[in-house]
Structures are given as C-alpha cells and as structure tokens.
Image (cartoon, rainbow, N blue to C red; front, side):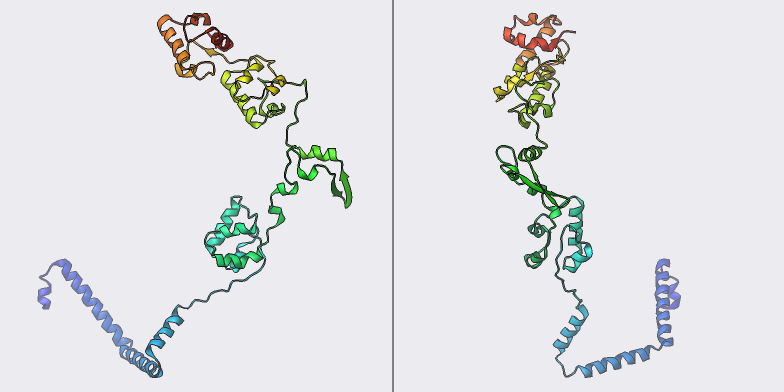
Length: 329
C-alpha cells in the first residue's frame, strides 16, 4: 500500500494503521539508542556460559533442580507444648501447626459460648487430621474452671438429696480451719432451688398460684403444674378444686391441698362469640357450639341457659357445669 493510497481508505482504518506505524518507530528508536545488540549479545554469551557449565550434566536433572529451587517454600515446623484450647491465643495455636482458618474457627466457637470440656472435644475441630490429633492430645490441658459445676456435688439420689450429703457430714475449710457441717444443714443446703412442699392443712389458691407455687403441693411436679395452669386458663378460672380431676392422670392425693378462695372468672358472652371461639372452651364441643349459633340465628339471642334445655346437645349436667362461665350481655 503506497502512501497515497492510505488517504483513500476508511478513516478508522487509517488511524489504526498510523498508530501501529508509530509504535514500530518507537521500538526501533529504543533498540537503536539503548544498545539492543549489546544486550542481545550479552544474553547470548550468558546462555552459552550456562550451557557450557551444565553441558556435562543430565538435562532432565538440571531442569528438575531448577523447578524445585523455584517452587520450594519454607515450611515452619510445628511446635509441641501444653495448651488449653479454651484460653490459647492465636500465636500459640499457629505455633502448634494449625492453619489460620482453623484458628478463626476456634475463636468463633469460643465467642459464641462454646467450651472444650474434654480433650476429645478438640478432635471435632474442622480440618484436623487424626495424625495431628494424636500428636496434640498429650499436650491438651483443660482447666478445671471449664468443667461442669454439677461435678462438685455429685449425682442426686432417689430421695432428692445429693449423694455427697446422704448419710455423712460435710467437711469444709474457713480461713484454713476445718469446719464440719451438720448433716441436717447440709441436707437443707443441698435442696436449694427445690420448692419446699406444703404440710398437711396448708393450701394454695388455684386462681392465684403460679407454677412455682403449684409445685409446692406434694405430688405435683413441673408437668402437672403446667397442666393445672393451662387448664385454668382455658376454663377462664376454677370454681371448684374438683375440676382438677378433669385433668388426665391427676394425682387425687394432691387434691386436699387446693382450694378456690377467689372467684374472678372470665365468662363467655354466649350471644356474640363465633362458633370457633365457643368451641375453644373445654365445656363446649363443636356440636354444642353449632347448636348455640343455630339457636341465635333462628330465635335470636339467649336470655338464659334454660333456653337450651330442649336441645339434645345440652343435658342437665352440661348446663350445670357451663353455667358459671357464660354471660348474656
């Protein structure tokens, strides 16, 4: 392409051609002014000297040696010393040969309240190999501060007392002097946190007592305390202690300890509540709630439960049981 023809081609192609030509001229100038030939000859002579030096060696061995020298990375040897995984800092953990991401996992575990209670717990560290664990196991020391507090008092016997205080006096030290606690005092202190049971003749009010007070009744534990409170809420309050017998499996021996001294009952407005609301009461089933709604739709609001006596869903005992819990306002 002649210089004259350049000006007859497309403008963008012309600019590209001129740019390439300028880069070529810059490269030639760089080689000319900075002695490209000398550098080339120096490189060639260096290459020749290397070839003469290694000419008597195995080319494959030479190339393998170069690769190993280029890719070799110094590896820090793992140290072995006693450590507590609950308190060891990052520097100690890295010296043991753990990876940085494993150290971060330990820190996250501890920040969320995690505790290594046994040396075997350390084996659950993600990425830890069996070889590493076997090597580290003799050096793991768990401080007694992280052991369960229940180990200090031992297991609890059938009587509810701790085995450490059943049948013998407890010895302790105060200011370096031995002090022997009386068996009765030890027994009482062992039951801290357990409710003191009521004696014969004492009572709890069903409509005022919470689950803690209910558990003071002999024979009533957490399960029945929750059932009593829940059933009272469904009823709208107790009107008689005998209603407790409606709870499945309720221990009858506990009945004399309950009484109803207050009568703050939450009543159902039988003329306004929907079918779904009515059937939520323990004394109304689906068919009875539907009968009430049908009566209101056909005959208007109820003025008394006696209005339902003619319905087969409401025999006399059902009406008597339901009477304290309904209103007609």
